[in-house]
Length: 270
Image: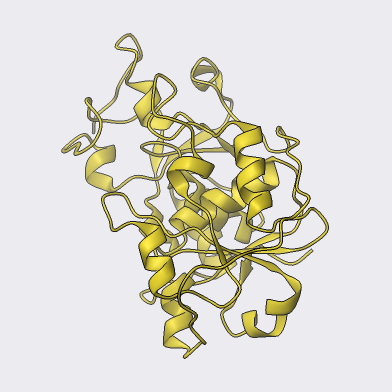
């Protein structure tokens, strides 16, 4: 099996043999569907974060895991089949694409890769651009969730490993909290912000660099690693980086937004 990333230089060679998903999304950013129609990699299908890659906000957090059948129907309509490799890209340095990568694998697809550097890298490389809507041939994907491990809020305090918080350092330390009602982090968690995973051009650091960065934070290969963030989306950027380095992870899907929904749960600031 190839690694979880595909370099932009390799994508043109496989475009005819993969299902290509555009999952452009940014917190507070412009709408993905309009950007998709304005320009996308030829043959891609758009998959929406809010309607396909997450459930409605609620007690389980701001981006709960989607209903398996809703997720399966959306990616099936985008052309996903179990027997055909999938490549996912975004314009958020892999943060949204990592969510789609994890969900597809969690629900039973074994061959999913993220375009390293995403839409920006494709444009820098002078890749062909298509405009307007795309009509995909529906795939045969059926959801079989549970392939990847997760933590519930009740399991977090008993987690026998190191929990990595993927948010910005100032949010982790509790100095500011622009989104959720309480600032701080889950007690005992260490902080490896998603930006740490990337080079200046938005592509991922080497596997050796990633291993070193996480080991320095206490998340080495000798520890089980859990990941969380604000709502369960960008945590998977850390999971993707660690997979690139050969390290498996456990996701806490509800993340900080679920954790602080219950005022009895402990909070740490530092």
